[in-house]
Length: 299
Image (tube, rainbow, N blue to C red; front, top):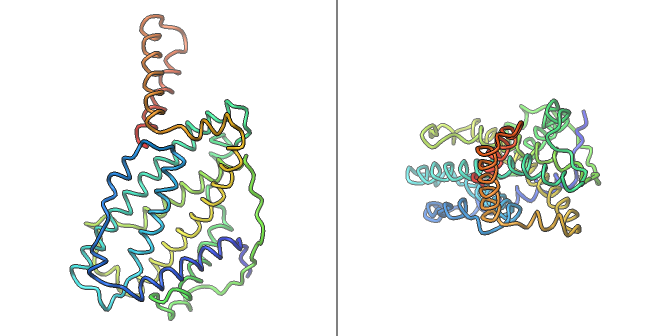
């Protein structure tokens, strides 16, 4: 059976494997215990949403690779405590990225559609459609299989448990601006899957580092990560095209702090109108503004 998979996705997967092999080869328990404080990054607002997502995606990618690229022979009790703290940071990064994506899928896309840019967003067709299609799930499983073969720290004996499939590498993929909504929806789904695969520190036990759990677990986490990176590259390309339009570029470049102020001000105006005029339908508009404000505050 042949699996259709993008050449760029394969390349990103191979790159991830090489980075993991390099890190695990020079694993040091002392260095592993040095964990960056990400609080200021999560709360940073003096940048645009696009820029913040870029920073968070890079940090998530680097952090996942470093968290799992270990030498279990050198893994002591202290290293496992560091491992749990790293899991906590990964979950925090994912939760923040999910908030960013929710804003992009809702408030941001609605704003773009008002600018007469044809974007597929949260319409009824997309709501009925599964974010990840069957062929994409097959590609993820195939990527996990490939990663077990390429990542040094994973147990090659477990390859026999995977159905043998041949790849059909797609050299080119059509990337359309109107597909931004679906790309964001797929990213959100991947972030959900990723969060589900990373247990809270209290639930993490040393059994996670034993075989066959470790290999199956890490291979799937890496597979999701490489596909998330692949989709994000598509998103960046679309944003690059959108920014050729000056009006859209201005919307994309607005700082988060400005968005919060703008939304708060508009919400106060809506409240004043509602209390003084009691116009028909104003409550729905107010509800929408409250939703937008809540969404932005979580960025």
